[in-house]
Image 1 (spheres, one colour):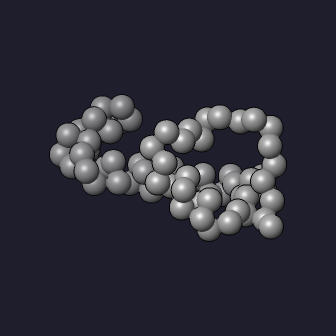
Image 2 (cartoon, helix red, strand yellow):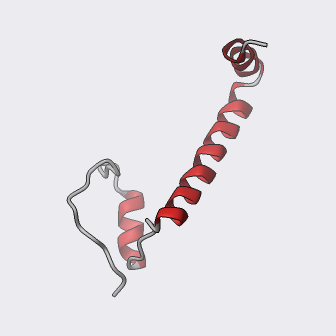
Length: 70
């Protein structure tokens, strides 16, 4: 069976459900990669809240900084 065709059919039948499955799978994969590569960074709760609420924040930026818990 052709995978792209099957994905298109499923996405056509239930776009929200399929998108939720994709998003969940991506999040699980991201968590595993972060855990395996030790990419988790501890930071103060107020900074986490500020980053989560900031609409201009990009996770693509990398300034070579290492963040450690204080």
